[in-house]
Length: 347
Image 1: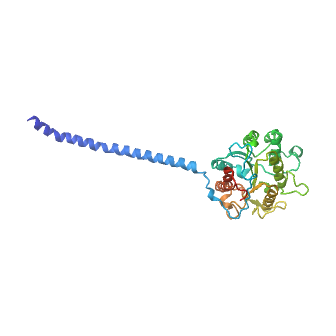
Image 2: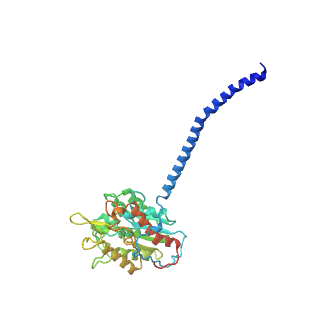
Image 3: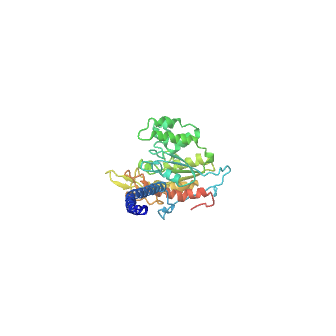
């Protein structure tokens, strides 16, 4: 047999081997392709989750919620100019549970931080109230919880001494003691000569505690709302005349009647006052003192019809969706304007 014939006889065998090799490749190729597809899907899923995480707490400021709102945000001077402007918009927020709660996601203050370029100092103290329970100083009344109300906190700041608060923290129950200490450390570090705005944002806990809007014969007492508003006007504004001050009205909340039934704070009276009694006083008093007023009562769609959707089980503090509504309202009415630092007197 010639060499050519031998080659011809071998060709089919080699072709068979080639075919076997070709047939052996598809499972490997398929597995490789499938693995690549799974990897791509995994990466896409991961990127989507990262994107969702980064945007989860982005606030759509078009959310603003109600049309009948009494917001009155006034700038003095009108363009927020100041002699020592450092070019940074700095905001200090005092408040309690509604703005400070972070048990189920970011607090309202954290949401504001995520959605503004302003520098925000968080001085919220969940478990505290704006108004003191006693008219006397806590050192005289023995009611140490009053050290954490706004009046005595600011008084301690002006005296440069937070020792009363720091000592009282150890005796307090039902609070995050580490958080409280952190807040006072922050408070002591703030240079109010560089602060542009003070936002005072307490919720319905003052109403539920029976704290008064005004006390006849003691209108400027720290145990009533009028005294707190006047105190901040007198003590903060005159010491730091270039700082703007705004009081934020509490949102809708429920109270409990003597049968333990839930009743809207706008209806139920505690020691003769409803929630809206205090809100009306806040609106009138801030007008008298030329302080801004932010209406989180009518300005946010948390009411008797929507409470199940936006309030937590305590009937005062909003859930995460409710917090987003509040943050959107504050961003629209305050932050958009103080960041711009220009020309409107009222809205």
